[in-house]
Length: 114
Length: 115
Image (tube, rainbow over all chains, first blue to last red; front, side, top):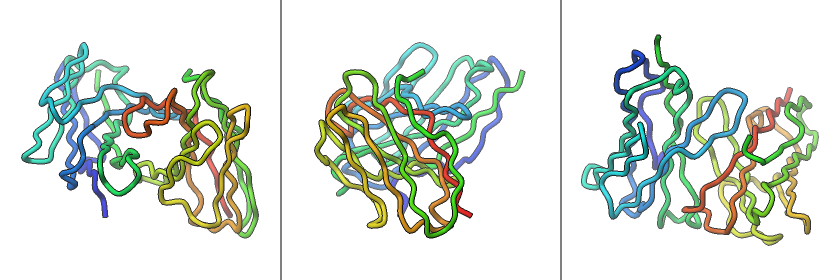
C-alpha cells in the first residue's frame, strides 16, 4: 500500500522554464512533507520541507505547495537549470503507524533540456 | 559531500550468504537510519538507532539486523541472502532522534547484488 505516490516516473523541461513535480498522499494524518533531490551515485539531499499548517513554502527557486484537502503537494522550480536534473523524492511523516518515520515516494526523474 | 560514509560501495555475493554494510555518521550526529531502495522503488525505511539504542523499526526482515556502536558508527547485517535483497542500501544520519522532522544526511549508498 503506497501511502506516498509520485505518479510521474520522469519529466522533461526546457531550461529556463518552470518544472512542476507532483506528489499525492493517502494518509490524512501526515503533517510534515519534505522533498529530497538525488544525483546518480550519491545519496539523497534535503531540498525543502513544509508543515501542514502552511500551504506554501519558498526557498529561492524552489517552492512547495500543499493542498491538504486534495492530499497533494507539488514542487515548483523556477527557472529550471541544467543542474536541477536529478531524481526528486517526496516524503511524508506523521501518525502513520510507522514510528513517525518518513514515508517516501518512488521518485520523479527530472531532465532539464538545454 | 554529506559527511556520511558507507562501505563498501559495491558488493556482489551469492544467495544464502551473509554480508555486513558499514556506515559512519556525520560528526556529532547521534541518529543513524538504514534504508533500502530496490529498482524503481522509493526508499523503504528499515531501522533507526539513536545514541546506540534502537529507536524505530520499519519494514526490516528478520534476516536483517543492525547495531550502532559506542563510536556511533553502525552496521547492517544481511543474512541468508535472496535474489530479492539486491538493492541500494542507504545510511543516513541526523543530529537528533526525530526521524520525521530532522533533516537526514545520506551517504552515497552500498549497491548489493545477490547472484
